[in-house]
Each structure stands twice: as C-alpha cells, then as structure tokens.
Length: 342
Ligand code: ADP
Ligand code: TRP
Figure 1: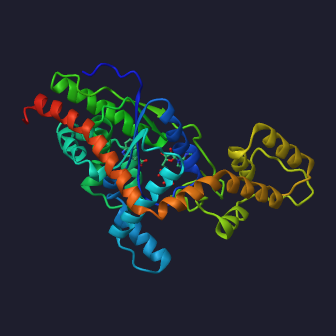
Figure 2 (figure 1 turned 30 degrees about the vertical axis):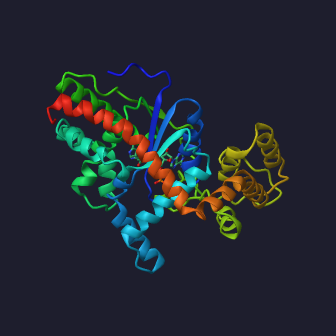
Figure 3 (figure 1 turned 45 degrees about the vertical axis):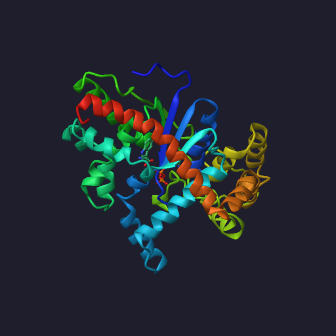
C-alpha cells in the first residue's frame, strides 16, 4: 500500500443534471472549495452517472418547455454549466484536479472489475435506486449498478475522504464494503477504505419551505439575477401575518435563507426587527435579494468572463483528466497485477 499521504485526498462528484442552486452551494460546493486549502482535491463532473437519468430529464423538460430537447444536447450543456459554475465559484484548477468522468476511461474499467466482487444483495438494499424507480425513472441495469460506478470513482484515485450530503451516505458505506471485499479477495491492500464527510448545511430550505431541491421545483439558482431572481425571492412562502405585527424569525424561510449570508450581528438585527414588527416579509425579502446579489456579484462576473471562453474551460477539464489519469493508471496497474489481468 502507498504510505499514508501527509495531506488527506478528497474526492467528490457532481451530476450535471441541472442548474445549481443555493442548497447545492451551501450544502456542498462551498465546502468543496474550502477543502482546497486542506488536502489534495479531486472533483469531477459525473456525466456517466447522469446517463442513467438524462433521457428521463430531457423528456420532462421537453414537456415543461413545449419544445423537443435531446438528451445528448442537454448533457453537453449541463456539463459545461457545472464546469462554469464550479470554476466561477472558486474551484482553482491549479490546486484541485477537475475533470469530466468520461475523460477518464479507467473508471468504467474498474467498475467492471468491482462488479465481480459486489454481491447482488448489497445493491438490492440501495435506497436511492428504489427512490428513483418510484419516481418513474427507467429501472435499467445502469441505474441498478450506479453504486459500483461510484465506488470506482472513489477508489480509483485512492481517496481517503468523500464530502457528500446525507443522501449519499449509503453509497459510501457500499464503497467501503466493496473496497474491503476486493482487498480481501486478492489479499492485497490496494484500496484505502474511504470515509465520508457530511456537508455542513444539511437542509437549506427552498421557496416553499421544503428542502431546496431540483425535484421539488423550489430552488433559487446560484446564478439567477435581475428580474428572474427578484420574482423567485418575492415568491418565497411565508405565513400571512399582516405588516406591522411582530413576526417570528425561527420558522421563517426568508429569515433562514438570509442567515446563510449574514454576519451574526446582521442576523440579530433582522431578528429584532421581526420581533418588533418593524419589518414585513416584503422588506425581509428585499434584504435577502440584496444579500444574494452582493454575495454572488464577483462570481457572476467571473462566470460571464469564463462563459465567453469555452475553449479555456475545455482545456481545464482535459488537463484535469490528464492529471487524474496519472493516479487512475497507477491504481489500475496494481489491479491488473493483483487480479491476473496482465
Ligand atoms: P437536488 O436535490 O437538487 O437534486 P442533488 O441531490 O444533486 O440536489 O445535490 C447535490 C448535493 O448538494 C447533495 O449531495 C447535497 O450535499 C447538496 N444539497 C442539495 N440540496 C441541498 C439542500 N437543500 N440543503 C443542503 N444541501 C443540499
Ligand atoms: N451520486 C452523487 C450524487 O448524486 C454523485 C457522485 C458520483 C459522487 N460519483 C461520486 C459523489 C463519487 C461523491 C463521490 O450527488
């Protein structure tokens, strides 16, 4: 086995399945960016994983937008969008290895090998698979074996820590199980057993008070601005307390969202206004919109500049894949040797 690296190696993947929102930012992306100061980071766009749901998504969006969307075009567009979002929000390609999953073919190669040590029973217990087919997503073999591909993503760069949301914990437990099974089967410590690190903000509320999520249609997009942003913020659900009456900040969605951006003094100040009845929900929403605008303004500028240079983004992803493949090929050499494939 490799000597334990001095700095932990973090890895995480994001599916290119739509516009990123404040839940993704405060739940995951912000932490991903901060981790660049604390270890070696590998971040990738999980476009192979997205294949399992992309046709379903294209169909859904085609109905919503009354125009025929092709799954392939949607995947290409979403992949570029995620790359732009991450780079604009502070992913530094000089410090983090940033790549597109499909540019690293060793991942799918390892997934096959891992499939041969993975028990059916393990996959049959996957909650996420069941939830997806309950939602009407095609029950394909790809969807069923999704956790094996995820294990390959993680194990192939021999990462130690995987920052994820709660919904991914079972997949991480499966990864640890598969890694242990492989190591025991071939009597070699090829894969370090990874652990997970739970995202900080586990539940950013959406505009309707439920957890913010693409699937609930209650998101505030990170890169929304101007009128569309104003419309979304103004539509955040509140109770019907009339203007001039004291308001309770605790259960208020507007207050919860404002708190994500505010200093503790600003938060106390707004809470005091709520309780004194000197601000209404409309006023609080205006403050929230101002906070969103000022927080994301520099990121928006950066995103615009990058979007004008798609070749630069492509170069960054290709360079990331090249660097990732140094690690993935190293792992595969050990796997070939241990399994007798070479
Ligand atoms: P969605 O629910 O919109 O489909 P994803 O499941 O793609 O979002 O989310 C990717 C990651 O973003 C999750 O693993 C989680 O860490 C984070 N995340 C998503 N929504 C929220 C939220 N409302 N609050 C906190 N974190 C969230
Ligand atoms: N399944 C993850 C999600 O839906 C995305 C993902 C794919 C991932 N491979 C990964 C996350 C490896 C962490 C590590 O959010």
